[in-house]
Amino acid sequence: MDGHPEWGRFLQIGALETLKNGFDSGDARILIQRLMTGDEYLQTGRVDAAIDVYRKVERQARKAGHWRVVGTAMLRPAALYAGLGARDRGYRSLARREIARLERTPEPELAGFRVAAQVLRARLAGATGDQEEMEKTIAALAGNGFTAPVLVYDEPPFRDMPTTGVINRDLDSNPEWIDLRYRIDSSGRVRDVDELRRSPDISGDWPSQVLKSIARRRYVPLAPSAKPEGLVRIERFTLVFDAEGHTGSAMRARSATGRLVSLDLTPDPPPPPSARGS
Image (cartoon, rainbow, N blue to C red):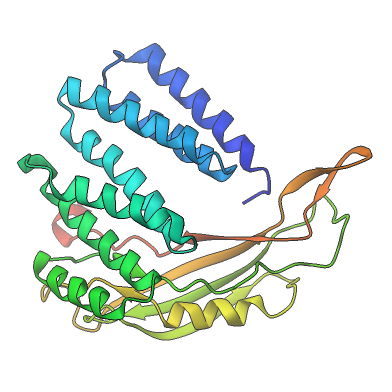
């Protein structure tokens, strides 16, 4: 969110080295951290490098018997290709292949990840305009007892990312952001979207487009045991202008084109009464 996406990878690699110095090489915590270093490759567009990391971690986790890590490592490329397939049809066959690969796993330890694969299948169907397939898959997911929000369909708020029109935006410029509050009802639809606050400076009308997009989201239906009035969420959307170099100058400046980043700000629920005194 500070506009230096490459820094995240360096920090994750540092965390990985720290874990390697304290645990055995096959420890699940090290493997999970390797996945996080792979995630950072995506921030700079290095898709193939991220996939290589995910595959390597999957092999290592299978060998060590860490099935939760195996499922997480298989889910990463499926989610990645599903996200890319929403914007580029060339990735859709890869997405369906990875989703089917996860759905075919026989291990009982991966049952939850097979449900996650169905969520991705519904997400891909919605992104590609197949509303019938999306609704069918959402209906099939309804009986899985979800008590937390699981996003299925998220319509992109912009066809083209917003621009500032400022070529040499100050490197110390503060990012633009808005905080939205909304309610997810028991059917997985979004209600009562409100803007809580915003940064002092906003470029154009991008907040109104984000608000409209949130209202069209679809989540997996909640279990009957969840709150009947639905779940209230608070989410911050930040328009980040990355630092970049320019031809003919060694000085870096902010890009004139932004990228949208979201962060969940929903407060944790209070502990049950029995746990407050412990």
